[in-house]
Amino acid sequence: MQIVPVSEIDIRLVPGAWPLPQAMRADVPAFWRAATEANSHLWDGRILGLTAPGGGPVTIRDGKLQAHALEDAYAAFMLWRSRGFPDIGLCHTFGWALIVSSDNALIYGVMGGQTANAGRVYPPGGSLEPRDVLPDGRVDALRSIELELAEETGLSAHDAEAGMSVAVLDGPRLSIGRVFRFAEPAVDLVARIRANLAIREHRELADIVTIRSPDDAGRAGAVPYAIEVARAFQAGQIF
Image 1 (cartoon, rainbow, N blue to C red):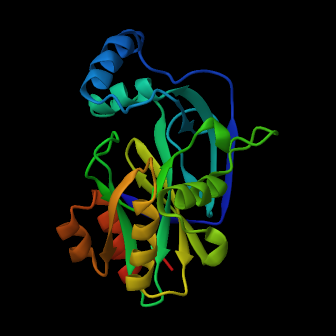
Image 2: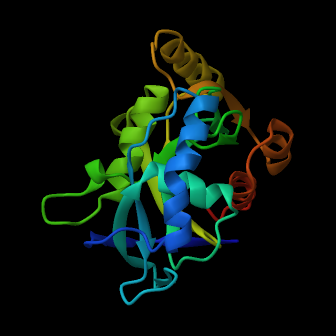
Image 3: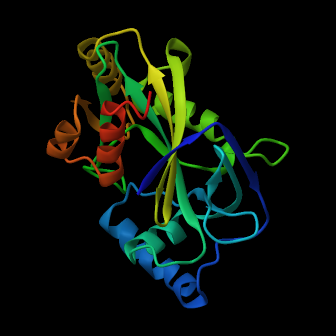
């Protein structure tokens, strides 16, 4: 797993579906029926995955992330995930907001039981979607992060000081994160987010947790990349 600073993001939507093997593609309908029978809250939307412009894994050179995006069904992604992300020449890509309080704590979300990631702990965020595609075909990953921040926590990126952006390269997963520093201490941010969650009819987060160290992240049950992000933040590599 690598955490790499990103100063420029150039992602462009191109025609075509994800390069799932034909046999795997044929299994999607049956898999999705079983998944929705187990969790009726799941919804088969559309999702973007990334490849390098010439095909293969996405790389970052001199701070520039350059990639092509392909659109496919969320159901196809979930089947791919359920099989351990076998190599299909594509990266699952999502964005996340690193909420930093005035007393230098991080705020992570605990995913709700109705979601596909129930109980998982990581910074608020979500997969890139067609709504993130601009009229000229560019994918606005940073706007996606800001939207997810507002939707999941009620916090506005406009109320924070934006910090650096990073990418986490983790095999078949590539995530893009951005730091947002708020002027409130963690206790106040936690209270504000929980108050917002309490009035939501539909919410993705079950709760939030305050992270002051990688050990805190581990004890909270954070997923591996979120623990590494906490470690990099504490070491001053993310600011």
